[in-house]
Length: 329
Ligand code: PMV
Image (cartoon, rainbow, N blue to C red; front, side, top):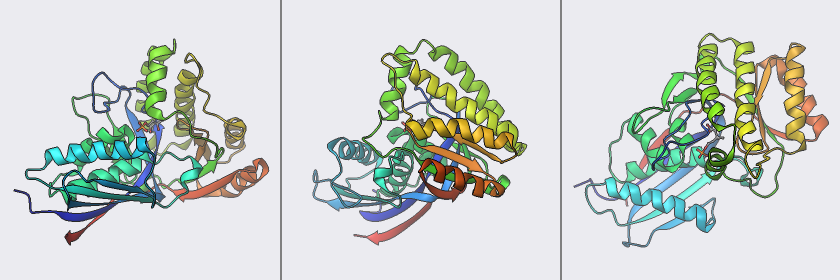
């Protein structure tokens, strides 16, 4: 039997891929079709608190103090149900609360941090003693990119193996980049990654090329990072991001994730770099642009965001997982 119902809390940070996971292999469990490499962000996190021991069948979910959408709540509950299946004894109903420290309306993908925090808190509360790799595999079931949010700094997730786990590549201090998240659009939600990548795989004539390019970019990004070669890391990261978005633009019907400030930044950031400003961009399945930079670039970037009327969240690479038990219910 497990030790009995307990309450656990975990805080995991968002991560942004330099080499993108975009495409799944056949079967369940979010097994990536492309290898990815990400940087954790130090100041953007999601916290999850999970308590087992309530009435059987009476699970409750609160997201940022509210019930959340039906789709969000059922995704969380399906995840908790999976964790329940891993426990050795009955756990009773679950009370799940998640909270994030950045505006939900900003349209920043939070599922990576959310499922990493949820995997940790729910398995701790269930009395499972999972090591870091097992936690990463569990988080991957909630959201592929969540597998990477279990680790600090630069992290990779392979596209091989039956049940892949992420692993650290280098701590943040290896290459202590800063990051600015430029909030380019706050409108209605984009097509979520899960649906976007499935649509691209099914309809983009560019898909097979993307799979080849992604594998090569990942290897180059990894070695540029290990060599602290900013110029090479910048070029490959931007190219990889644009190659991923090329599958979206060439999907049928097309997925255009960008807004006007997104395109403006795609042009402006490489221009600044050509003039000696150490900065480069990447974009997930949305309109926001994440600019990684070295400190001397800060004022030029601030001026650029000002010119475009874009608000930015300023942070740095980092983001270690934190967890604590609150004890018996
Ligand atoms: O983990 P998901 O299903 O939200 O997919 C993440 C997809 C990207 O954010 C676009 C790329 C990545 O590697 O994080």
